[in-house]
View 1 (cartoon, rainbow, N blue to C red):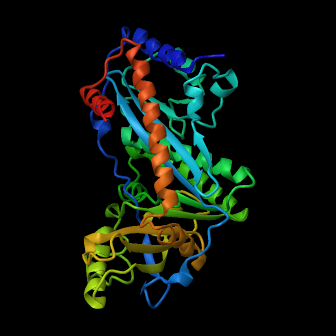
View 2: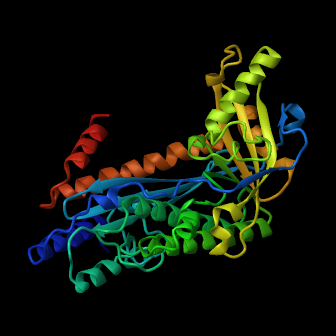
Length: 413
């Protein structure tokens, strides 16, 4: 049996011993945001009346349970290597069942067996060297099954690899792992709510095509191709097994789908979705004299405009709804609304009914299953962050100034 803290210290100390033979290659360029902003695609209206007001009959029962899925990542940075920490959770709030990756109880015990260590099903720590290191050290790290040192495409992480991409890849790998576990399990709810898109349609693919496939973007394209290809297969597998799988996207300021859709007619010129919905909310308040929940859709979101269908086979259209729910019924202002996008694989009104049951029907603006799993997985990733920073205290490895400030912030509450 092995203490995982001692194992991590061993890995990091070997880094330090190796550094004396090398020079630092730390790159600030690799810490800049990579242009992979979601979401790209074309929204096509599927109904003559795009805006409608949900009623009691639109709310469906979720008595058989509903599973929320979410991932989280955090960063510890040093002059010698970058550490990405990831976690993912699935939570059925109705029947109080959950799956976490990693299992936090294993970290704070000395019963981390060789079988668990070699379990590649949950690689939750990405280690990116900022120095040249010996291949023997890489082989040693590879034997520790919970550590990533390569991208999904098999490229060794180094100082040039974009750190935002490392974190994106870590979260997507973990999400795919837990979706696979759910597809293998029986006796759980057949309704899944994923915090985020059903599958991503990053603008990186179009950028790659438009710039005549520059070689510096190919490593990221190859990784996204693998991760999204796996995600599409998992979604199809879950759907074939009778699951209703939905994505709930809360950060609408990063997409401009509505202003480019068939209902916009070019009126708002690339307005982001959050701003578009705020204008819609203002018009609803003005016309009806008060706040009330409303929905835009359904729309068909075709992935062809994003370019991902050029690289990934089997990609299907998504059916999309935009949901607007006021937080306070007596406050007639647009900023009183919560907005989010619901993505589905089928044109089934039961999908939006499930989301309404988990939000309005549960006394919440955002689906309650999403709120609870978000809180759970952030608590899990925070615990992992504490764990890694405590481990680093037992080594001679310094932290960057930003990491030290972040740690002080965590510990001060």
